[in-house]
Structure formats: structure tokens, C-alpha cells
Image (cartoon, rainbow over all chains, first blue to last red; front, side, top):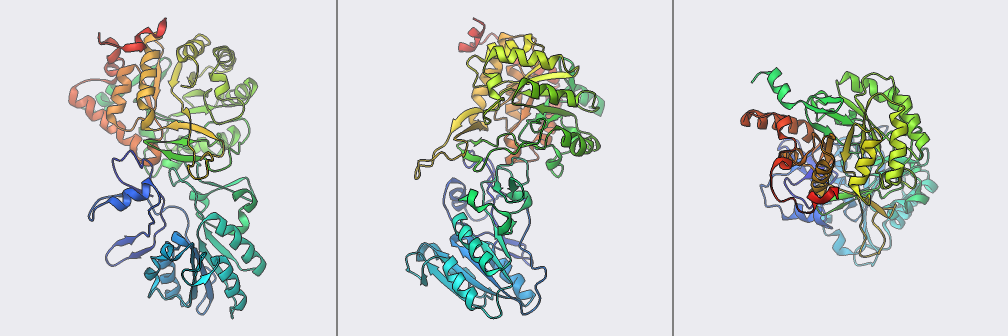
Length: 228
Length: 322
């Protein structure tokens, strides 16, 4: 959760996933798209400005059970690509092969894609709703085709993006019986389970608290019919 | 100044409730306290108010439950909580270990529900007071419905009064048609302390879809946006009902806000939405208030009601009584 001190708008912190870290320099990187007052305020910060960071909070993607040579997929919608440079770094250290499916509404929405050059992705499959870059159509469709053809099959899928994309992807991975981890998004007031603002309708109980029990959740625990 | 003198300087009395200092965390913004132990030494706070407890666990409203607004936020959490039984078994023992002074916030759909929760808490050690939430705007039944009618307030408070020997705090709604009448009804029915104010009913709409941003439609507005309104209400009730101990709530975010609410007539303050932005703020405010009193050679009890004692213009607030 990041906060720019002293501001009344944005008033609350904003939750961001960590895009990458450099342990040598101590740098932490966030990939942010400006969409509202919180992100606009971050963009307005001059170099060298101070922001307050509360974290790390919540859980992270898991590589448990994946050994060298395992093949996995990353499915990202738009700025949902943010947490994945760091994950690809983790793949590389465990010699896991990860393919990147990166989709957006149009080419401009994927203008950060160069950030993934050199992260060590196996294949990179781009798609746009309007066909202005890569395959035309939803990233979930591109992934479904790729998963059907993948040999060896994907052992796990990691995803981040908007809820409608997750809902579509949940159906794909359920059919293909691929375990999945979704980095869910919900408006968060605090980030540590106090406000209970960021709940997500769930299957085994009424709600999951995204900041505490997630934000990484398996799709089968989410009640999709109540989400979208 | 030694530790003893320091603590004497910060001590505040609200009728039968004596707190080590006037910094209290507001219900609904501080979980069960245990969520904050990385950030605050709970034993340092005047008190913490728990999440509103109901007889049975309560699920709350579907998302979206919160949305940020200028200088604050709207929420319609819908009083999600673990229920009083789980609180007593799982939460309170740990709060004891942390040395917290606990005010149990209570709500229900009906008078019987409120009474049952208060009865379940009666006789339990280490609960300093009960705070009745008769002012939540985000549930279909109960909550604010009680607070918006002086007659219902009086009936509920007198039944709860008969159920508990503890200090009884009643948390008032700024949405009541006449806050002073509500305050008077609560006091006359046996409230020891009044806390004011809960959130203001507000709304946000997505300009693209024209849908309300919260699933409940409306929500409770909190944060610095409401501070001047809340401050006026505390001043107004303190003027109309002198001698009734008050806890001031509404957008309190820094030491200056604390001093202002004390001056308006509050004997303690509750820190709410600021806890989300800055989870360590309540503990820091205790330190800052201690330094303030030390530097000015004053005590909290002298800071309470200073604005009431000045012969300054008070606008409409002066006419609150009649």
C-alpha cells in the first residue's frame, strides 16, 4: 500500500503489486497505469519524492511443487501484467519455463510490453480486442488455444487482470483442469484486514477478504456468478 | 515530568469511565484491535472500540463496499463481524494479553438482539464499557433506525441500561432529524457517555455507468471531509447538555483535530478512518498529546470544553437548546 503524505485526495493508500525488486540496489519497482486520483498523484511525483510504503501485505504466487523443466503460463490483462517481471525472475531461478499471454483492448494499452523483454519468458503471445497488436480477440481465447496445443501441458496458470477476464479464464482452466492462481483486485481501504472493504464473493463461505486471504486466490474458491 | 505526572495529565473522566488518556479508536476502523498490533501498542491507547458485535456472526454487504471520496471515504460494510461468542472466546483473551482497554461495540436488528449481546458481555472481565451502535446507516434493519427516533432510542437505551452495570456509551447518528433530541433521549434513558458522530449517509455514482459505486447504494461518509460537521455537532450537544460526557468522532487525523474536539466539549476522541491510512496514528497521537500537555504545562481536563467557556460567537450552535 502506497501513500503520498499529507494529501486529502487521494486520502487512502493504494494497493499495488510489486513488479520487480533489485536486492543489490534495494530498489522496488511498481508498474502503474494512471486511471484516477490515486495513480495520478503518484505520476505527478517528482523524482526523489518520498512516498510511504506499508508492506509487503497478503500472500504471493506459489511455485511449490514445480520443478526444473515444468511449463507454466502467465495470463495478464492490461496493467494486470504488473506483478509478473518478478515472477519470471523466480521461474528462471527454478528453471521453470513460463509462457506469457499478454492482452489488452488495443496496442496502446500494452505500451509497457517492452518491460518484459529479457525477463526470460518462453513464448510471448500478444493479443488485442481490436487486433491492433498481436492476435485479435481476448487474451483468454489466445490462452485457451495455447493451452490446448502446449506439450508438455501447463502445470499451472498465473493470472492478473480485470474481473471479467478472470471469470472467462476460470472457465478455461476448469475445463482444461489446470491449477490456477489469480491475483484478485478489490478496492482496499487498509490492506491488513481491518476495514473489510475488499471482500470477494466466495464458494466455501460468503466472502474472502482479499487483502488477508489473498490477493492470490485459486479460481475455484471464487463465486464467479456473484462477481460479474 | 515523571511517568506518574504524565499519566495524570492525560487522564480523562467520562462519568463512571476513567481512561488513561483521551485517545480511543473508533468501532469499524480498528478491527478487533489485534489487526493493529504491528503498528500500535494497544495498552497505550485510552481505549479501543471493537468492531460492532452482534449475537450471531454477520456476513455484511456484498462488494463493492467502500469507495474513496474527496478527503474521505464512503463505506457500506454492513457490520460484518464474528459474533459475540467468538469475540469472547477468540479475541478478548488476546486483547487482555496486549493490555488493551476494551470498549465493546454492540448492535442488533431488534431491542432483544441488543439486550442479548449486552447480557452475554455482562460479568466478563476486562471490558471497560459498552458502546451501543444505534447509528449504522448500512443495514436494512436496526442500527440507525433506533438512532433516528428519540422514542426508539429511549426505549432501547433504557432496556440495555437495565441489563448492564457497566459504563454505557451510546453512539449517535448525525443523520438524526434532531441530534440534540436524540442525545437527550439517550441521556435520560441512562446513557453514561455519548459518542458522536457516526458516519453521514452519502452516495457516489460512477459517471460512466450511472450506477452507485457501492452495492448498498448509499454508504457512510467518514474522514476529514466530515470533521467540521462533526465538530459543530459535538459543540452543539456539549452546549445543550452540559455535564454529559462526550466522545468526539469525525475525521480526526492529527493533534490539532484532537485539541479542537476537546475544546468543543469532548472528554475523549475516537480516531476512525485515519487508522486505515496510517495504522500507527492512534499511538502517535497519545505521544503527541503528552508532549503538548508537557510543553504547555496543562492537563487534558483543562483542555476539555475550552471553546464552551469563551464568550465568542457561536452561531446557530448557541441556540441548540431552544
